[in-house]
Amino acid sequence: MKTLKSITVVFLLALSFTACDVLDQMSQMKQLALCEFNVIGIDKVKIAGIQLDEHTSKSDLGAGQIMQLSAAIFKRELPVHFDLGLNINNPNNKPAAMNRMDYELYVDNRQLITGQMNQAVNVAPMSNSNVSMPIAIDLFKVLNDETQDALVNLAFKLTGDPSNPSDILLKVKPYIQVGGRTLAYPGFMDLRYTLK
Image (cartoon, rainbow, N blue to C red; front, side, top):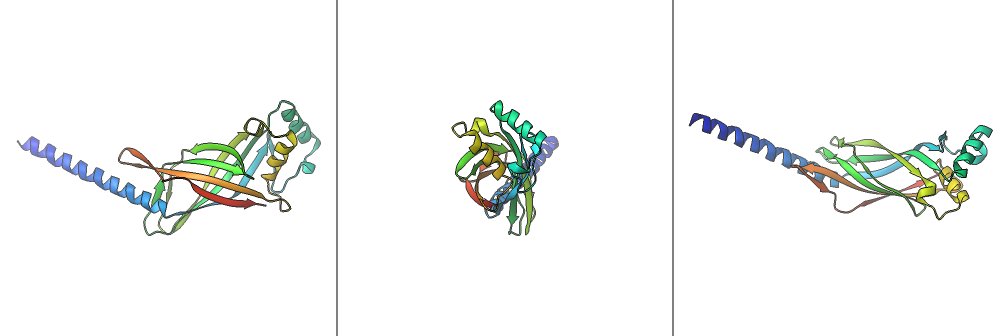
């Protein structure tokens, strides 16, 4: 009988801890819904393996880099890698968290990629957190109806061009794990940014 009572007590304690965890996770989801998400820029742009600096144009490339870019274009490949910076501001007095995030990225009204960031993010109360999202795409595969000049121009615009800014739209949907289930933020949030 004593053993049965002990098992019952342990079970009830485990149940109460689980319930507390679920309530805590649901609170973090609620706090996440009140957070402000903002795109803060694009960094570490690499085109066809060529690392570019801010405001780099095609005329800034050396002879070897031009040959490298031309070889990629000849093969109808234009791999582009960059980090997209995201800031999450938590104005609440409780922590906010997410387990993963679906996203869609548009540049000048052209969809470049849909993907998923499988990185847990926790934002302390009354603070913010910067998240770096690594993006990798092949522009020839993604925008196969565009001319090669248009694709190259788009790739270089990712380094910023004050005379010809780009409109960035990042659509995000965060998820959080609650009691063994994954809950999604209702719908996508539209985050807009002007890259110049």
